[in-house]
Length: 312
Ligand code: CDT
Image (cartoon, rainbow, N blue to C red):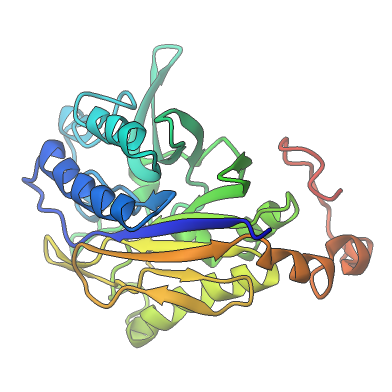
């Protein structure tokens, strides 16, 4: 019997700097209600889905910086999402900026969680590949300060048993790195979820601006095919506080083909029926890692990840 997971991709349009968490959650809930009506098992929201993407501007004041982060999950503003998930029997993926306090020290991460149909958190991922820089570059039209505001994630690339399959989470820039998919592929991943905030313009490499949409799909389609997995990529799109961000949210099959894609740059829901069993033929044949990978000939030092023996 086919293992179908019906996935809703909940693309968001821009979020204003002044928009409250409560107002954003109203938008997220409207998309969740629609997704549930359309039979979705799971709805996927973008990276940093609760606020405008604040790494695009310089913040000096620590209290102001803290105000962009969630100290608890669920918190007062996000609890309605967890309650609705339980009521509607729908899981969700949510990206947010996380402020954790450990040994009296503040730690900031770019985080995403996977929540089950019972409203309980299944797992958490903290972004590993942080783009940009930590210094102020006021000459640029906008900043890319993830290296200033976030620590590198410390949870590896976990894959969880969920929604009848093996589900992994990465965040935005991770999708450009083949090893992010491969570490999950080696754990048998069947469904990769990711959100992104991707400006059309790259101030460091403006000559590639025309290729931003192409590189988005190129990275995710290659990751899906080469690791025999579904990939779900969801954007925060449109012009947000002067930064023009791409859309193109989509669901990609293990064949590498896009099966569903958003058509706008605003809040938009699309739904795809993902048959996890489609992964099996690719995993058993062209990308049968145990049979065909030849790591011992690659000349690499390969490390264990802590998530199990990923070379198994
Ligand atoms: N949020 C995030 O990671 N954005 C980056 C922008 C990089 S600029 C090329 C991304 O990889 O989409």
